[in-house]
Length: 419
Ligand SMILES: *[C@@H]1O[C@H](CO)[C@@H](O)[C@H](O)[C@H]1NC(C)=O
Ligand SMILES: *[C@@H]1O[C@H](CO)[C@@H](O)[C@H](O)[C@H]1NC(C)=O
Image 1 (cartoon, rainbow, N blue to C red):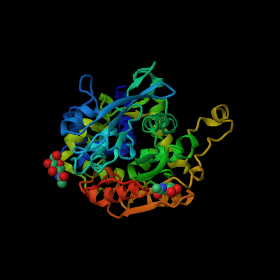
Image 2 (tube, protein in one colour):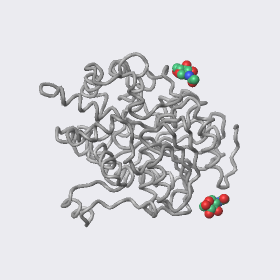
Image 3 (cartoon, rainbow, N blue to C red):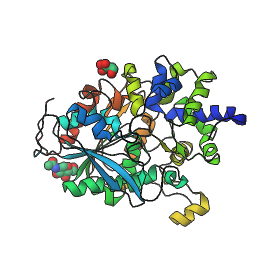
Image 4 (cartoon, protein in one colour):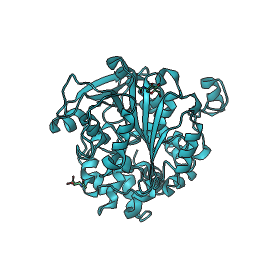
């Protein structure tokens, strides 16, 4: 997997492909040192013996937290964390279940990565919600499979379509069975792609009462992040697949090399990297980058990147394109069937938070999503928020989460609140 020899151009090209989606980590580049040295400096967690997310993040702060394992129907073993109440709550005072789904190159840790006063996962638990944390296949918390290992090509043979159809189905079914109650869904970025695709399928929609979507995405053809657009135009997703690179892992030597070649060759001004990638972020905490890098970025698959790039190229919200013959075999038609947003039941209440500076979830694309829904979502638009702010802004509680919780509670639950 080494990027060498005739690969200098390829390395730079790869870097351009990968970095745009490399949100949290790249943020490190903005503050002084280069992204690659930040990556090298960071000591990643989650190795053998490090314990799970509960043990690393929540238990030390005094929050109750248990680890659960869910197997998908295609054999992936996903970890799910359960935080039944806040620090000072009581075990039998069980609030409505809320399920949090992270975005691309992130994991369940994203919801706890700032302080307990700032991070949505803690805030929901402290406000009487029964919190469940999803972790999709391939992330550091969900690397198991009944027969495959991460070294197998087949382990990485999926895109967000499988994350919606298999991972979400398995994780939500588990919560639904345990709680015997409809679930409140919260997703960010790729977590909203997965959610909106899944809600169009009746077996998943029936388990969800309401959904709060941060940076909602279905259509991607107005993405304005310039590095993403360049990478898409250069067909670098296909290039990676051709090179036989199926796992996208920025912790690998190759990943670090890519970041190195990008920054050191002077191809990219690392000081403006974050804004070139996701849009500006108003309230990112630059002093916390080393801590973020202990957890993120998580791996994803090249096939997933390809699916996302195809959405940018074609302006579709459809299943993975296997080519005419492959589609015919798999879907019984020549084109991959779209996920039909009008299939989402009108009774599934929605709330959307989106930002004027978000270069990935563009306002034009968000408007198109809204028009295709049968229900009318409640909207929270924040002009100076970017893509990362919705999960990591130091002011997100007041700017976003207070309203998000009002929405989640609006359907008749009687929860105590400290806000
Ligand atoms: C930013 O992160 C640092 C380091 O964790 C922390 O001490 C500081 O309080 C944070 N700033 C804000 C505004 O939350
Ligand atoms: C919750 O929302 C659903 C769908 O809008 C509605 O049918 C139901 O009556 C609401 N329940 C309460 C308790 O408000």
